[in-house]
Image (cartoon, rainbow, N blue to C red; front, side, top):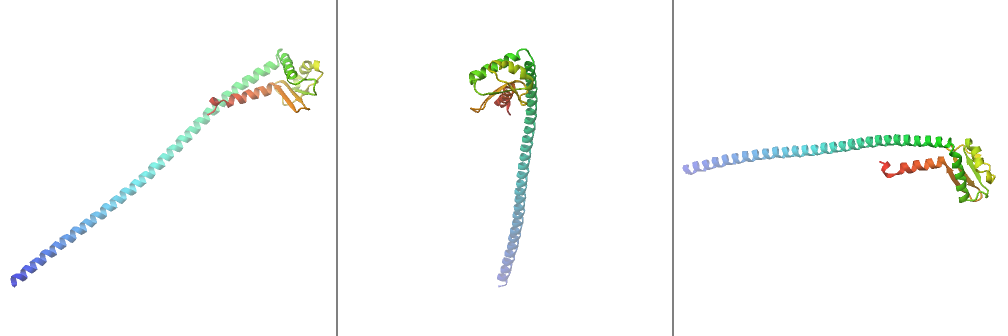
Length: 193
């Protein structure tokens, strides 16, 4: 029996040592698992933080590109407007020179002929011109017996006809032709950004 008891104690000691080793291995495995889980969580948090930083960086770059594009487009537009203004200032000067030339009375005669073909000048009509053109316009309208009136809105020259009975306006002024050309020029698609 004594051998049995020794054998039983040895068996219990071996089993206790095995259980202690197993418990130690399980504890070590759990600690390693916890460390791995923490590392994974840190890695995921780091990845999420990195994704957030990348997203912010892309957003900032997109904003900077858009801002740069806006500034560049604005500079192009300002330069284009400067060129257009210079071009139309030159055209306006040429029109002013034309209105001061000896060819201008002939132009007023053509305006009267166009107006008469469009709507008879024997109908009641008011004719407007710039103040400086009153004498020339009166000569051009002489055969119809119409006395022109000065209109302060006509600055470049030409004539404007108003038929009050029909409510018709016929604008043959250099001012309206100049404004129309400027608008048409500026509205061309290749002139816009």
